[in-house]
Amino acid sequence: MTKIKVAFCFCTLFLSASIQAAYMPYVVRNYEGYIGKYPVHLSLQFYDFGGR
Image 1 (spheres, helix red, strand yellow):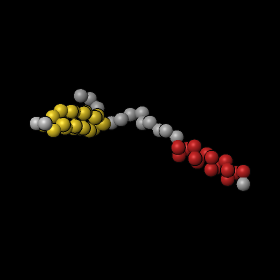
Image 2 (cartoon, rainbow, N blue to C red):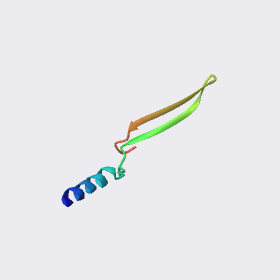
Image 3 (cartoon, rainbow, N blue to C red):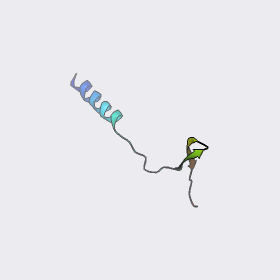
Image 4 (cartoon, rainbow, N blue to C red):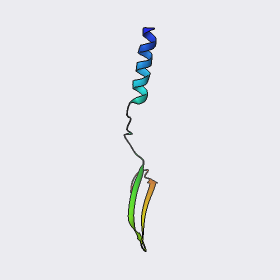
């Protein structure tokens, strides 16, 4: 029974851990403005695979 509790706690901690990627191969550009009287928000995402 103790082994099951330890395994359950380990799995719970592993699955609830916050993971952050070290390298993001994409770039996000956000633009805000108006078209006439209507507010517009545009978000562009594209891959950046190296040398610019």
